[in-house]
Length: 146
Image (spheres, rainbow, N blue to C red):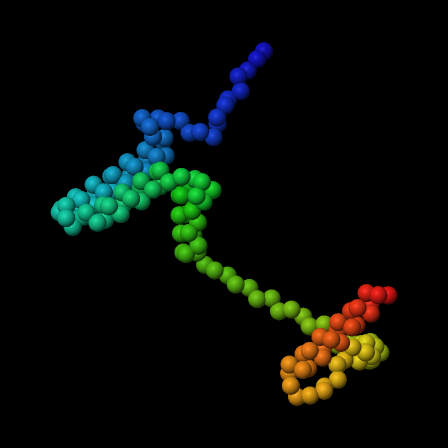
């Protein structure tokens, strides 16, 4: 027995002319809210600015492409609303300092540090910097040759 596999399941059906069900609900909701604003204001000039804002929001929810954010605009608006209204919890975790070294290990580290320690020649910081770079370069080249 053969069954037909559905194709194009990501594409929503056009129910109301060129509009999908979601688009129709957004546009109809925006138009209904605009009508309520007009009735409450009882003046077209006063209610014009809120009506334009409501219709712009409903049309952008309906027709804004997914490719800009990778998600529908309603998901982005919901995430922004939850971010601004939700509580923010910042947790600071104190890092434990390592335990002090034993005297034998500390002496070994001092011995290793003394072998690459740079003597202070002058008070000039630039000369000290060039001296330390020359010393580190010679140490690096000696290790590389071995």
